[in-house]
Amino acid sequence: MRGLQLSLDKGQKLRFERAFEVLESLSSKSNSDASVIVADDISVNNEDAILKGHGTAEMNDRLVATLCGVVERVNKLVYVRPLRARYKPEIGDIIIGRVIEVAPKRWKLEINFSQDAVLMLSSMNLPDGIQRRRTAVDELNMRSIFEENDVICAEVRGFQHDGCLHLQARSQKYGKLKRGQLLTIPPYLVKRRKQHFHHLDQYGIDLILGCNGFVWVGEHVEVRDDMIEDLSDKSEQQKVKSWNTMGDEEVQEEYTPPDTRQNICRSANAIRVLSTLGFTITVEIITEIVELSKSMDLDVHEMLGAEFYVIVAEKEAERRSLPTKRR
Amino acid sequence: MGLKCLAQHYLKSTGPSFILTKKNKPLRRRTASLSKMEFVNPEGLRLDGRRPMEMRQLRAEIGVVSKADGSAVFEMGNTKVIAAVYGPREVQNRSQQSNDEALVRCEYSMANFSTGDRMRKPKGDRRSTEISMVIRQTMEACILTHLMPRSQIDIFVQVLQADGGTRSACINAATLALADAGIPMTDIVTSCSAGFLNGTPLLDLNYVEDSAGGPDVTVGILPKLDKVTLLQMDSKLQMETFETVMQLATEGCKAVASYIREVLLENTKQLESRRGV
Image (cartoon, rainbow over all chains, first blue to last red; front, side, top):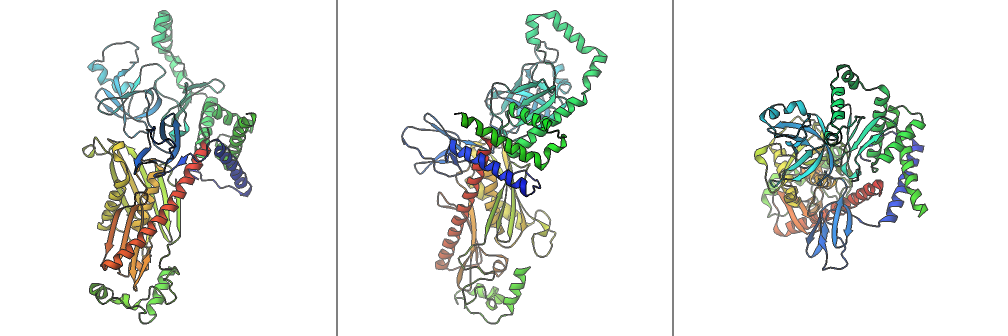
């Protein structure tokens, strides 16, 4: 199996296989034979009225797949949803990227797409929170905002007419990510949802599931949105600002307590286990796995052992078989 | 090792049981040692015990390189090849960037330990440059490059064990890796070689048969479209025999294709079932 290098003993192997058999039987019930591979025919019942979507092509008057994946049908549209592929951006997606270059008036970000994304200086809020034209001085101080190798959270703004992908970070919740871990998982495991920023209160951590398969687990930071506070109460905003600039407070802020660090690592390992097993990654499942590891009294590093993989697989099989019974 | 012993054993055996056609002068001259050697014994078995139209055992595995976008190991008997695909990603050399299609690059190399005698060759020797180009051109023919403008796709193939037919094994491995990386293609490319020794067309030559100096036809096809994307031949062949050899190689390609499709479909189904709803 991909990326899974475990030394399983006989009993574990059996349990593993059993869990995957359950998963396989469950999925075959829900959609039978929707999986296609390159150059497979896609059966179209009413020949004339279909729309060819991504991953399909017409060949000798037949519709064939050009990707390995699952055939999806939405009314007349027929397309192939690829499984293992690079990230395909959609406008409004929340993504995480790494700065690879500071160019004139822009940052170039690696986001697991076929090209590098561009974050313009003009399409992000300045740290002082004032709306104004970006001057040459701002341009010279770009490295004080983001440097090379910084991890950044942003939103997909759209494709420019020249074909390159532009991002924006016009809110306080976007921006540089500090004190945490970046994890890379296959993008097909992250589902697009309303909420991608999660604050796990019980662990004191922030979890950002980027649509591009980059996941951030870090210490919780209070978001202060200047825009909103600007409207509501100016004096409070100033209070917050002065509080932030106080010297000793800043030192305290730099320090992450060991408990939080452990929680970060625990969640990160939960994501690692889930992604190597190829399970969908959502907050609920991550917290479930973290709780499971805590209830089993496992050390953080023990979560990557063979036994825990087997237990997670079994748990997932159990979890998925439950709702179908209710129906 | 075993193959070498076998070859020596056969070299000792006397006299050819099959006589080459007299018209084929260059073949006879070059293969003075060939005439002594018996590649198909009277029972109709080859050196490694196969029938003339039998292929070696195939084995393929997807997802062997964790950091690559797509990867695969492909084995044909004792020939073992690993392929890794990176991309589509940002073009490294700006001047090569194209605004309407992806750039496909390929690098072929042989591991030092892949052959019988340990060799240390410089990276860019003529043979590997040529094979890199052959693989690149073959894969470019099936990748829908216009769907990924301003990007590049890197294919790295390395021979881990060489026992003849590395060219075809590389192409098969590269196809699997590309399909794994989710790169759109019109069809999968499969390749297989065939030869003509002792007056018999032989499918999927191994190292001993390959180095006999006889004709070695490597064919790459798009099985669904029924098109040929690669055709290479060493030495000469008569028109009539060429057609039968070519036909044989094409049949081999189709067998490889059905195996590759099986592997890919199983992989896709597994990924989908794991992911759940």
